[in-house]
Image: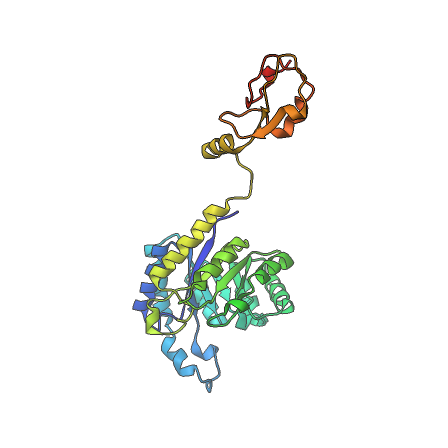
Amino acid sequence: MRSSFIIAEMACSHDGSVELAEKIIDGAIEAGANAIQFQIWRHQDMVVPSHPDVDLLRKLELSHAQWEKLTEYVRKKAPGMEIIACVYDSASGEFAHEIGVNAFKIHTADLSNPLLLRKIAEFGKRIDLSVGSSTFEEISDAISWIGEEGDPKIWLMYGKQLFPTEVADAEILQAVTLAEAFELPVGYQDHSDADSDEAFSLPIAARGAGLWIQEKHVTHDRAKKGADHQAALNPDEFKRFVESIRTIDAALGDGRPHPFSEAEKKYRKYSKKSLVSSHSIEKGHLLEESDLLSLRAESSGIPPSQIKRILGRTASRPIEPFSVIQMDDLE
């Protein structure tokens, strides 16, 4: 079982401020996330001019110079942290490639956008395909379009695009089905209400189901109720989230048998039953099943599973009641 790969999804929680973005990045680094995810876009490539969100998008949009500054900020403070760029247009993809992001995220809005998928595939970097609220056919088509331009690594990112997502809508096992159907790594994007217990328990359940890629929204201060705040954890909460996932990693192990630890050996000696005499047995007596009991004792002897080895054998000495039978007690 491999360790979890945890993605801190900043989305638009920076509210258009580089300073707040840096605060979010600091929280992701402090928590020990493997990656920080930026959303790099231009508002004119997101919506038509008459769209009701156009003014909000203008307010939230960061310039290329600001994204360069944030990229350098991450590299300076956490050289080993991946930077993932979620892009919505080819120009933003080109820019993200130029500043050296490690991987790309394609939002579910663009899963059926072959022009963007083919363009991003040209860069040869891992592509995280968000597949929430999509059909198997749409996912299959997206994978095919990417394959036309090369062979980049693909992760499927599953999570209902509902903010917040109700428990009954999470359907975590669908992600397991996707992994089996497409034979690709599948990650879990949690969009539970960040004020609920489910914001922690559902990702833990997903990890227990084998989903080792985890994406979680993080913000600077959820109480401000800024952009993308509903499912976003505060930095201290995000740290607790990462710790909980790492704990599950440790508990799951690697799935392979290992030698018993000293504590397990001690437990086995205490717990496992041995064959003991049910009464006094005279020297020369042929052992029968009625002569034996399966009981815990202070020392280990012959396990009950090996009773056939000693039935019909002759006692080589007198044996006291409730004595642990050893092979040298028999002829």
